[in-house]
Length: 201
Image 1 (tube, rainbow, N blue to C red):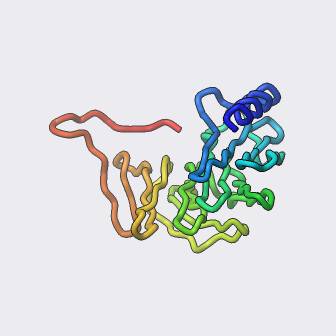
Image 2 (image 1 turned 60 degrees about the vertical axis):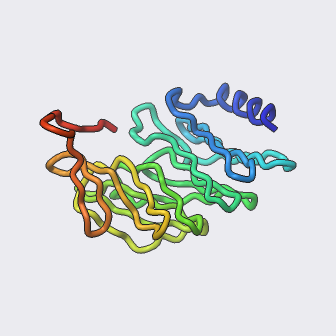
């Protein structure tokens, strides 16, 4: 199985190189491997399940230009599928039944790598008009209600495993903050340090 994964990944990388600093590959608890190789006009996604023939898909939703800010991400959903994100315009879901792609609202200026809820939904966080928007997305392509937080330039989203409540790492006017609905925690250097903390997408 590992030899098959390595050979497949090598062939795809020769066809359409991904960003060298990002490993767009993941393996779930059952040993199924998922990956994506972004291209300039379209990209290739793959799913390799133990004892099954490899599955491959190509889609413009997996394209990424040289100046893209979105870091490619592959997140297994815990149900035999995975979420694939390579740009701020669309997200894809792959499983044994095929691939689903979903447009991200046009107001999204920057999208963080998705988190995965306990039910397998993707949890997306994006920057839109100086706010952070968080929404669930089902594998069937249905968005849930939006949660809006008063910050901008979202860098990451994670979920409380007890409740699936989202936390985001984002930039506010005063610097970096951690936010969850109803709570904002500034991130500061300890002691008397006054170093300005910042991240560049």
